[in-house]
Image 1 (cartoon, rainbow, N blue to C red):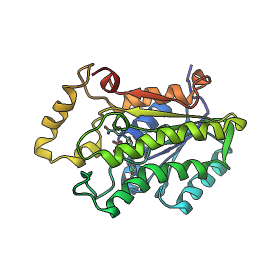
Image 2 (cartoon, helix red, strand yellow):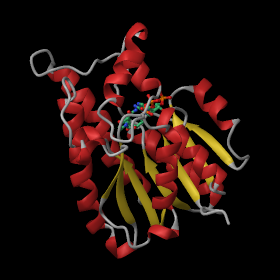
Image 3 (cartoon, helix red, strand yellow):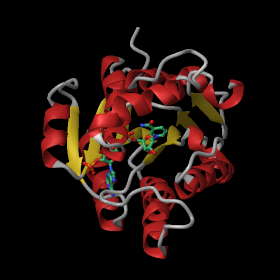
Length: 253
Ligand code: NDP
């Protein structure tokens, strides 16, 4: 039986990488709803592969008006929202991940605005439209637990997302809305390729794979499968916690 039959989901950043992997898994499990992003072309091409009950909505998650429009439109179209996946984030366009020696205050703010403030206000904007009993899944990162050169600010933002999820989870108990974090390890996505020069991307990926106990990088579908569990009624007793989907890298290596 389809695990998400007729559940209405909003997946931010559902047009690329991990978000698209989650949208595909949800679509296969009978969910309906909206994928969001800023890039019209990838929104269109991603939508074409999902079940016909999905829609694509353009919007920047750092803009309150865009967030309000996304949730209002989805709610009007489908009559409810059961699942929110706060996935949009990661690498800020055109801004490298830098060490404390190199980073400017402007670049610091951009990483925090996208990965922490953006996530918080995505949740806040969804609240008037989320059904009581809904599931919110915030996409964290193994970088919240495991330091890597240049990833301090990004890692700190994701660590704050984990802390924030625990707090929001308590705030929303009266509405029976569950909040959890799903933290991927190393997943090869367009973001991964954007961070690394094309000629060395395979070598860099291998250095990561060398420290992953299961001996491979993750796929967006690995994260999609875990997200299906958190979105489904199978996880009703999973509240205010983090699931790592990282091939054992964070806690075992
Ligand atoms: P991608 O670059 O492939 O996807 C990022 C997504 O976020 C895109 O859909 C992009 O859409 C959207 N996005 C980015 N900025 C904005 C914005 N301001 N407003 C709206 N949408 C935005 O990256 P990944 O799939 O790798 O990353 C997805 C999530 O997974 C991120 O939260 C990242 O931190 C996390 N993650 C990734 C890991 C990895 O190894 N890849 C590991 C751990 C966590 P568009 O450009 O159209 O706006």
